Image (tube, rainbow, N blue to C red):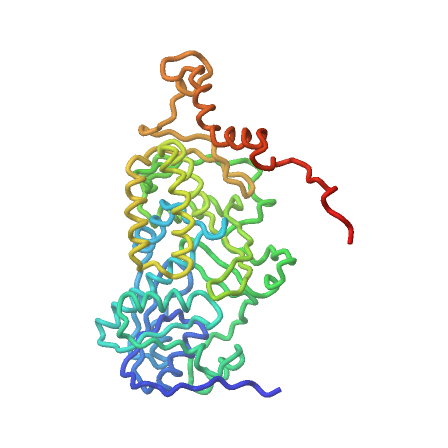
Length: 428
């Protein structure tokens, strides 16, 4: 069967485009493709978010591919303090398990793209996200929110390249330097927060992931036989110390990744609902993030009152959905942050955790703002609680149920368990 050709759009006049560039095969091929199809100058922008990929020589590679310039920027600290920590403080987790590692990275990359486009006088931005996934939405919603005048070019929705072989052929034709190493069967995204895996055998949700696939965490079965205790100190919901040693955000998260990784902490296997309508299976490694989230939630147990904690749980669900859907730069997300900031004023203290063979076990928490009082919670006699008061409370709390039951007993309506009168029903 002949390959179906994509409908070609008439290319608008583009003078200069800023491309979100990783140095991989796809974005390397996009450089000459943009020049060939739009006749424009291409500027590459690569964000160092802690992906641990080889950044040396990336500028030379971009220039050799046809770019006129390449920005390589270390955005790790901003990524942690302005994107990761707000999500942690909000308690944002998508579909019960996903800690949003890719989701909140894209708005930062796209924002910096827009800034460079304005700096360079570019009239377009481009990305290498496919037309099937969430990233295209995250990139493009950010472009729209920050500079809707920029033209957006999404090659995967336009070109005829449909396979790795097609891309390699294109690279050879236009002298794009591509490493001759074999490609992993997995599609991965890595930063200082997590490492995601998709594709390969993971496309069958019945298949167990291969142990060799994991890169940040050891197999819990092979983790140390002795548990490790760690203590994390927070100030207003922000982690500041590990085992009493003050650390900056990069050092702190890197340390937690190291500790969690050697104990097999932070593995998640999830079939998630993509924004574009299909389900996909992803396996994630988030060792440090898993530890942080558990510790932060433990401290909130002490420091937040019941009504605030319960309402914050509702906010967390919507916050995660907004981030997953690429709606970082929205008034609602900013309003959520204002609410979260207010809840975190007293979330300060220390949390003690035990790490053992893939588990993060909470073993202790303390705070000068703790609302827990042992003398109030005791079953003994004290001044703040009279057990006899509970009788009146229970009667009022259960009044609606009592009224309903009384109506049933008086025959005003059918009771919950009343048997129907089958004699009224006749067989035809």
